[in-house]
Length: 189
Image (cartoon, rainbow, N blue to C red):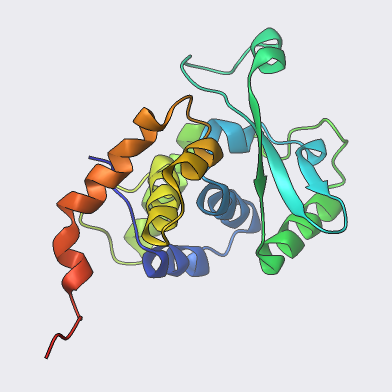
């Protein structure tokens, strides 16, 4: 079963992170459901702002260890994920402006293991957790958060970049296993 955090737990981690680079990486994983490989492959040209909508185009980079080849990058499926949070939009734009990145230059030059180590250290700094929290925990949390807010499984599947909703159904199974938590704090009498 995928391990996930609820919004208050994610927000606590984000608020505890003081490094703007790691904060932005975690923000992007949480707000878009992106895999860490997809976040680390981002360039300024992946962010879209047409004056009405703001979002990111993610390339689905999965199923092969290591960095994808240029050929794999060209044929990988792409998906647009809107970013509605104005504070996150501002953080992205400030980060891109301050970094003076070229349009096709990767904005995060680190390995996923580095990000995972940083997340583990952050979790320890804030008091630990009952399970291991990694980059993928943010992706699972994104999916569960959308399902808790009654978003259609098909849309969640598309946002996650799954080929079929069968892959996304694991999150509905998680929710049925954790059903006891939904009744916590609900008074019937």
